[in-house]
Image 1: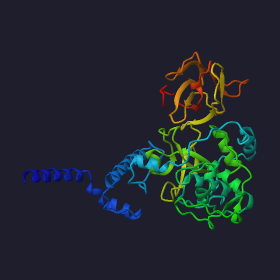
Image 2: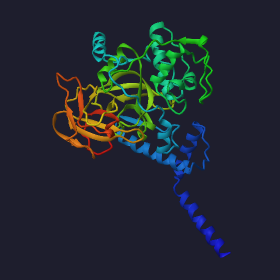
Image 3: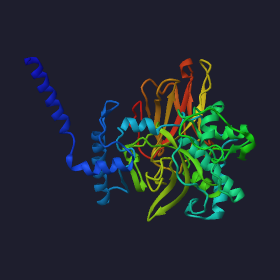
Image 4: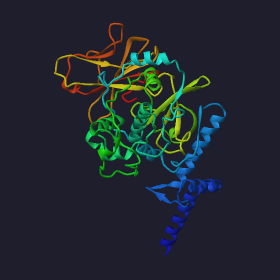
Length: 435
């Protein structure tokens, strides 16, 4: 009997401790949120997490951020939305969808930056928004990579035919596995375009509606309404080329980092978050325009999270503040022969005169490791990552005679076979093994 009373007392103490984590003053706000997003107001523990506690933590995060916004310390404000009861880890898992980036090189699939600049200079425009021109369908929830791919195709079809036809995201989710996409697990717009080419076109949303799940492929070529001849990449890490492409060609499917808490609860304003990561560009969106608010320039992106997120499903993302999220390109490391030398080209273009060039090495199944980094303003001081030495790894800066920054590997070893990433940042790197 004594043992039972003691256990009951301990249990009661634990219940009191848990209850003390809940703020009763937020009860009404909690019930309103649950009603708006169809959540049970008496949520218990789910996946080992107390949803009310998570929601309150997110609520306080938003309030603190918005206080800084009213004081002019932030360029955007935040609001509670349907992600309110998710932990940071849960949101990151849900937000990530695209497969790892394919290696981008100067191939026939790459648009010419100089040709884009020439075409855009004739237009002489400082802003554009394809929503105002009737090119963009309303924001609906969907698999992000399929969503951004169909959005770009819809805009191109509108540009050529004058008709805006919503295209089938479900067809891409169900049917583009042969080109490398993974349905609800993840995918990339480029692989979706390849599927549409191989399939002879894509159906309309009307004949192949979205089901919010992966099902068997039911494509019917006789119902295709839009076909694709080819597609091309915009030159990487080149904001001017991206702006010119949007101005002269139309909306562009892009992949960005959405895994920060601030992105999760963005409501309005020009978004800037220095925490964005070069290794977490894991969410596909549609870039539909650009403009400025006062002296602050921005991109306009269309997300796939519905009208209750952001500016009715859209976001304004900071533009032309260097490459604040860091843009990267990859040069595929061909299997090397031991004892020979290798030269890797970095195709990135930039107008920055300050900042860092960094090279990373990645072997399949492992994270990237810093090889070396050096300042754009001077190449005398090179900082090396752990295990990389100047007797075998050096650089050749971009010059008038050399059209790209180069990584030179002398007396190669079998372990040098890998993928090497180059990156240009507008801020100094720490020289650590991981950025």
